[in-house]
Length: 246
Figure (cartoon, rainbow, N blue to C red):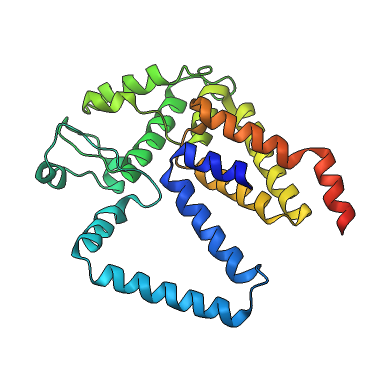
């Protein structure tokens, strides 16, 4: 438990914090042995406090509204733009997928940029013979940079990878690498359900959701986080011991 909490803070990802908070609340409400009346009182008190906090703070309301277009992901800013220019030149999700004439002063919120990266991958798949082999490990970034230039975006966007581990894996390792990742995640989820281990289930669901918005394995800390906890939770000895308890 403490190892998981430590890694969550080291990763410093809003996605992980938000997902784990939801799962912790679910655990408290549906799995905890706490008295039902205490659970209800806690949930009611927290809800009232949350609603009053938002209603009484104009800053919080404005911030939530500004973040609504980029839920679960970080804002990807064009740092050369002022706040007014960002609003005037903001790209929507639909435009990120369909628009053909981007400009260097366009601003991509996080969700729009990730949709644009999916579009970029689709174009790469159509233009290059990478379905089975991919570009190679960490070799997709130069191709992303070419696409940024091709679509005439601000060159600052060249530093961003796909921000989606499923696509990142497919682009670099091909369909077999992608299927290997999917199988690993499904086995992890299956073992979590089979073991009736809530903490393992938290890890399994966190990974499945987090990899949709982050290229986690492009960073050493992401690889270490996944490998260590994957091995701990899915070791055969651990599975057998938990099975014996039931």
